[in-house]
Amino acid sequence: MTRRAPRYLSGRADRPRPRIEDTPGLPVPLLLASAAVVIATAGTALILWSL
Image (cartoon, rainbow, N blue to C red; front, side):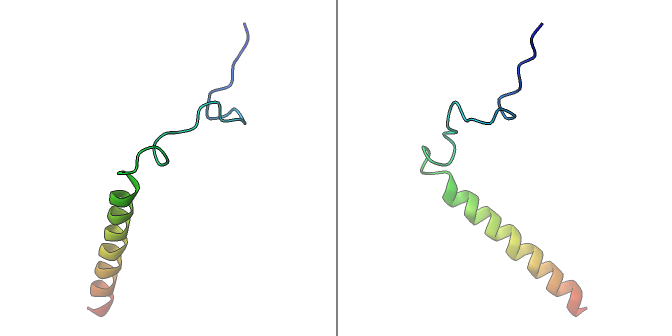
């Protein structure tokens, strides 16, 4: 009974992930969403800090 390591534990990437490189429509909304989260957390922190 041989144990194979999971794909994420193997050192080499057998198949490149097609999420960010091959899909051009994905990184821009993801960057916008992360920027919105950062701005919202900074805004709430400033509002709570100014109270």
